[in-house]
Image (cartoon, rainbow, N blue to C red; front, side, top):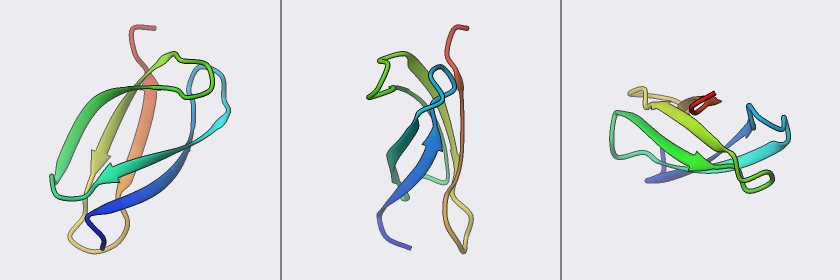
Length: 63
């Protein structure tokens, strides 16, 4: 696994495809990132397994 991985998700607000760059050095992460399409805040949860790709879940922040 690389220190950074590109992960494709859909924005929970506008449903457009978005590529997030995930830092793979922290095992569990939760942060807010604005959608590059509609600028709405997305709550991003990342789990980094010992092997394999990061598991990413996005939800609406504040909505």
